[in-house]
Image 1 (cartoon, helix red, strand yellow):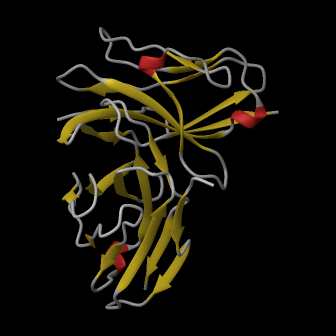
Image 2: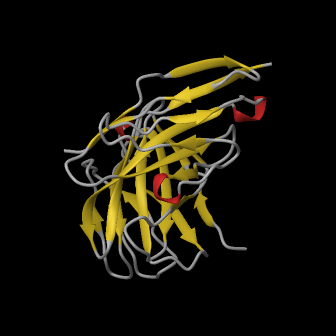
Length: 113
Length: 114
């Protein structure tokens, strides 16, 4: 069965310091991975997905199949990055061209001014 | 404006009551989902739908039921609420694309059953 593990429940960093939010996954097929973010009093929203190989708000994430990881990184943290971050894996196939999302428990990032 | 709406945002209700959590989307999406999230825990899929008259159970067993009579509407019903149903319920929708369709979430309903 697929599983997403986010080992840190809370991560505190100082403004300007590098950030790395860890995500490890377990999936027998070829994974599609995402990072979702929830800012205070806002709804859950997509931050980035690995197939796009994009940088959003300075965040990047590289899929490492050997280590089964998809860590989220940002070189210089900003106060507005404080939020709850969820790693998610697309699978298993649920029919009609759709795959379910399996979420990790989330990591709360707190950026200290 | 294209969006996903959930009502009520907060609901406190007594044991045994029947409740319906509303979810509507003006995104034009075919697929809709209900997730349950306990505080500090991951989201668990409890129901999903590919389109009108299509409903499926998710990976987390739930006593709730759903219906999809209209594309834009995906209500969730609990016939007899219990304290164990206390949780946050998130509705989401996605477009028909390849397997990596992005899910868009509503603001959630926080349910407390006394």
